[in-house]
Length: 303
Ligand code: FDA
Image (cartoon, rainbow, N blue to C red; front, side, top):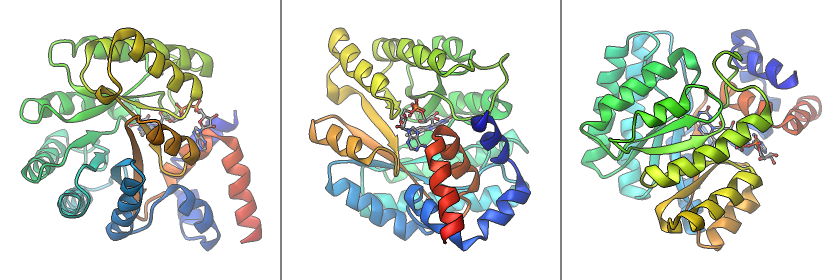
């Protein structure tokens, strides 16, 4: 119930305006967001790299209302890949296609994505495509499929909760793209997505085996011990070396575990968001863990 409320609130523009300008939210924001500028995000990346942890940078912002904003976001992403190549090679960028305008004009979005992929390829940086709400999920997957023709190392997130995901994965058995398996962070109807947390986790475990068996270099985006232990065990069972897959986690979530996996010799990449448009991202993080909400409410009261 609380989770649903928070996910509904994630799309509430009025609340976004109120909280976005409230200085008391700063403490919570800084726990999950690396900073407002690219420079701050690059510094966080270097710090994580020094601890044996890789990074994917995410420029916050989604669902642009006009195409001018999608061009601005594309330019900012191109600036990010160039900075990565100069200052912290090995990092990737994670991009949301709603930020590049997929909800407004898929052709314009495809052109922006192509510009970004070309710029990233020129400097040897890889791109990951986030999977968003099902209203743009199908279009995102088609844009990704098209991008694979020229940039086969591009990665896409696949949501275990979505009922269509097993079929989508089957459709990739020939092209064998790189994927990031996640549970799914958006409010979806029962028609489209599994609703019970246990059911989603079971599906995650099933798809983990499938990904390890069929796809190269899968990434497992999860903080769930049960899923992480299963990945490790399934990889051994299927003869997949730990250098051939990676764990991914969100900046600020289970930091001890992130370091532990790195110290144990597992590949781990942290999704590091930066920028000013943190509101919907943060609401989804709170929906994932109500304890974050208590921390947030406390910071609002105490300043
Ligand atoms: P689960 O929600 O069961 O959490 C397991 C444990 O992890 C919790 O008990 C808690 O200890 C800890 N935890 C989880 N979330 C937390 C939080 N926010 N704060 C504090 N502790 C927390 N989704 C999507 O729809 N599209 C996408 O493209 C992506 N991309 C993505 C990239 C990466 C790198 C990650 C890690 C996740 C995503 N997600 C995503 C989000 C994903 O779908 C999912 O909502 C979260 O990862 C939470 O699910 P877990 O698998 O961590 O399990």
